[in-house]
Image 1: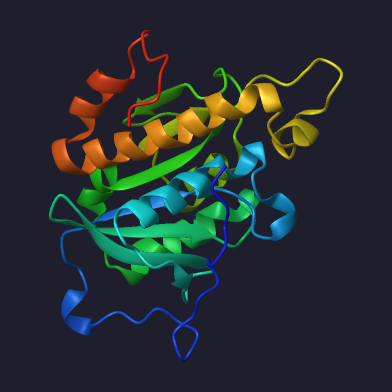
Image 2: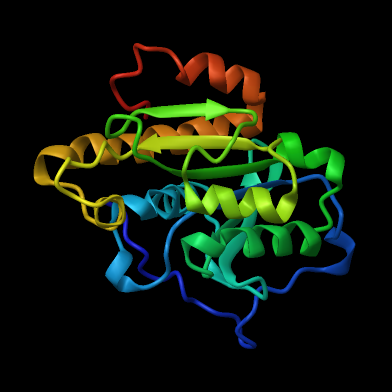
Length: 224
């Protein structure tokens, strides 16, 4: 799996600085959910972080400390400006970082439904399977639940990555904080690669195109 090495690279003042002339411009904000700290690296709950790291590598986006209780960076996909966000609030308080990012980048409310994209783990999907939705409930995911609370809307794009159902003898919290088994690893990595490609397609072609391409039952192999 991709690791979080280098995610704490900082500017001289330890912050990502944004030029005033860029405020309010057309952009996509892509948020990967997870928990900060090495002890959570490569856990099921942190697969959203893994996808953001993959995009940052593919599109030469430097992930640095921000003012927003997050690591993040700015770049471009298919000529569209993107902002990558990895909240440092811990999963259950993800909404505070997302709300702060929308405010900091002055994203208009009418843009949130199409241009805020959140990528995260889903225990209801088999390992590595992805699903894209334009809106919806939290589905029991505490990070999404907190985002809904802070944004007061269900209308934003979600990319869910399957991390597998918990074994009957394991508590849900223990399951999502566990790492993938050797047998699951190839599918997990494939899910990260496919989710990164799906996010690129959302930005380049729109969410309807991406949903049609990636939500089919035949999505058994990573696209890469």
